Length: 76
Image 1 (cartoon, rainbow, N blue to C red):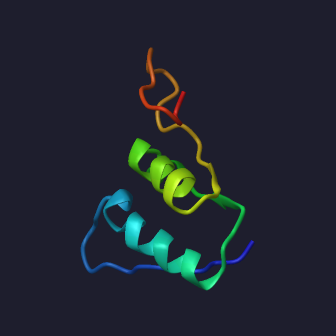
Image 2: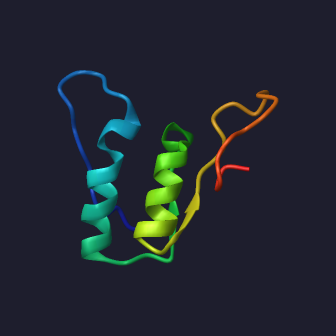
């Protein structure tokens, strides 16, 4: 496992807010086949970015397993 990008914020911020630029930055350094990231990044937008734009696979735990229905093309 290699850490390719990081973002330190002064105040608390939602993970997804910084995810898109960090994923693109890390992909420009090294193009991984898989992105293994924590459940704070569980959003359809992140899956779309990783699969469609970066041509990689996302391994992200589902944020709330008790939900009855999980929406999205990649989050099923």
